[in-house]
Image (cartoon, rainbow, N blue to C red; front, side, top):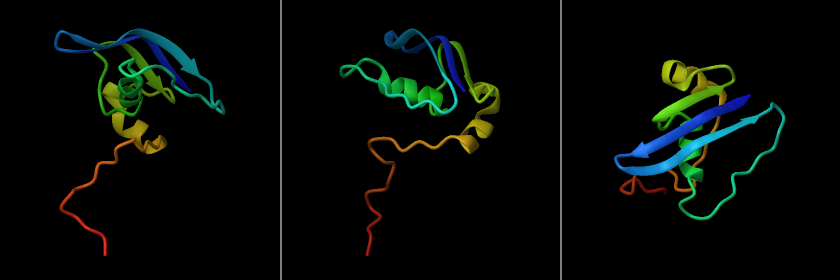
Length: 92
């Protein structure tokens, strides 16, 4: 299960997301929809432990990402839109 409760993420004085709450039950298929700048990527980065929330609580499979990030990364897969590759590495 994925559960976010009153989650906020601030980047200095800018707000990425503010007081987001939702839960996703096992076996559910969910999409994050919204206009550019709505916080979809920020939410995904929080769920996948690439960012920590500034406030609120997150539970992924019962784990706390701040304390148990490794366990979460072992049970979740995430392929971002822009894959993290090195430009100087080429494929033959």
